Image (cartoon, rainbow, N blue to C red):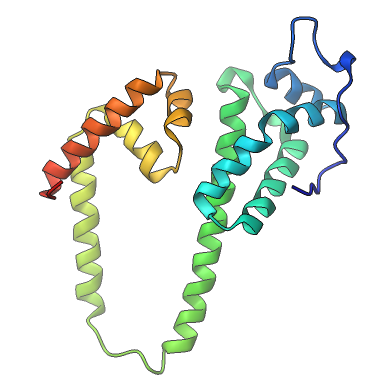
Length: 201
């Protein structure tokens, strides 16, 4: 991946702590002081996860790389805003990546919607906008109501995995629970949702 952020300075042995790798939290603190070696360490450590998360959402490889570049540029520019008291560095970075990927999806969708409206406005058949809007609203409310029937733990897992695009292991990390627990919550939650919505499995 080509980076737009400062050229990544590869770490030397002095950049490693005696006990092993430097924590991401410490690296962010050093990056906040414009430490390029620390940025290189952080990039090498977490870039594959950042790109992997973005690609799961965007699919397109070129766009995924662009968004990943934006994420690392944002890390370089805003590392001083990271507060370890509010959560882990990995969560902060992956949340940033997820947000930027979703922003790109929304921007692309808006652009497609505009192009579609311009292209078909003179040819679109008449249809009942009110009825369509009402149908979408009713379906949304059904899902929303069904979600309230889940336990809080099931709802968190389903929201992160199916609406947030996180993998099972990432959901486990975000919720600080074993991956087996996440899989159980998701399975039980989806069974409950199907029952509530009257959908056959």
